[in-house]
Amino acid sequence: MKPRNAINAPDKWELNVLSTFEARKAKGESLDNMVFSETVNENGKKYFRFMKAIPTGEVCLKCHGTDIEQPVVSKLDELYPADQARGYKAGDIRGAFSIKQPM
Image 1 (cartoon, rainbow, N blue to C red):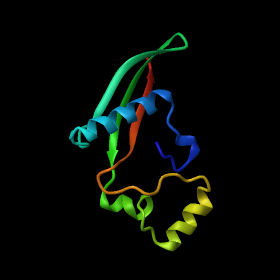
Image 2 (cartoon, rainbow, N blue to C red; image 1 turned 60 degrees about the vertical axis):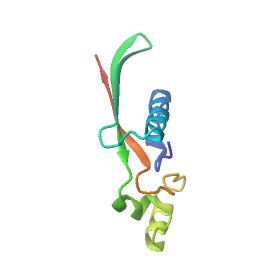
Image 3 (cartoon, helix red, strand yellow; image 1 turned 90 degrees about the vertical axis):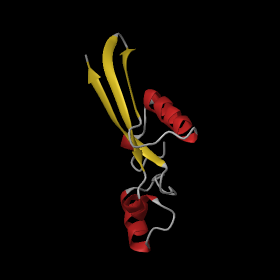
């Protein structure tokens, strides 16, 4: 829900699923196999939608954490001036892999 690049901002369906993932995590469900899929109708067309949560690991914190080294911060600021994808802790949901396939 905090994109690094606005091109990757979640759509309404993805935001809903990410919110559901957060609720499932809060109830103690493991992120390792947290997935959701369904068939949806959008503008008269059918799509298969799928998402799998991406857990924040230790290596992710080098660019997405709270204690990012200054050279990395400078490069991120240069490449992604509207970056929101920082401040994560290990075990947070950093995002999700998402598929939208026409049927």
